[in-house]
Length: 164
Image 1 (spheres, rainbow, N blue to C red):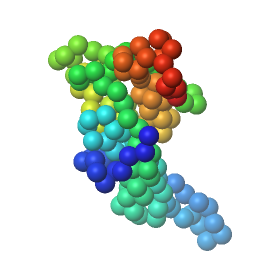
Image 2 (image 1 turned 60 degrees about the vertical axis):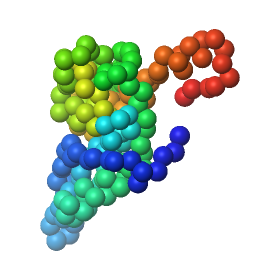
Image 3 (image 1 turned 90 degrees about the horizontal axis):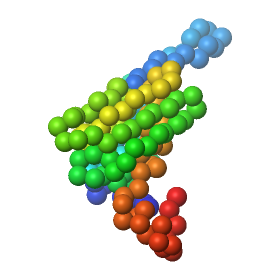
């Protein structure tokens, strides 16, 4: 489902900035790689990566990339509808719904994604090395697996709608 990012009130959060080097004949050329998460706090979230010679340029490229890759997350009041496990490369993220008042119990990269998605109560565990790029992608994989109860009922009753 495509959405116009200009219609949403998107906020962005920088998750990680890395200095990378390219070795050339005259020495090393340094660039910056930025990992950014954007979201409106109402279920839309996206991640982006940008690389440039200066940090602000890398961040703006990452924000533009994230706006092109928005996904909608079904929410149940202020938590997720059910437990999911997201994986990407060697990273594994477990996301569990939590009762009201629990807050966001999650590490840095996972916290940024679920905060901007609009989740206020969740318990998350990162299993793996903790590479921020892979952790963010694993979290997004888990959030993509979420289904709202109405969709699940429609699928189980043999609805014509195909999810995926």
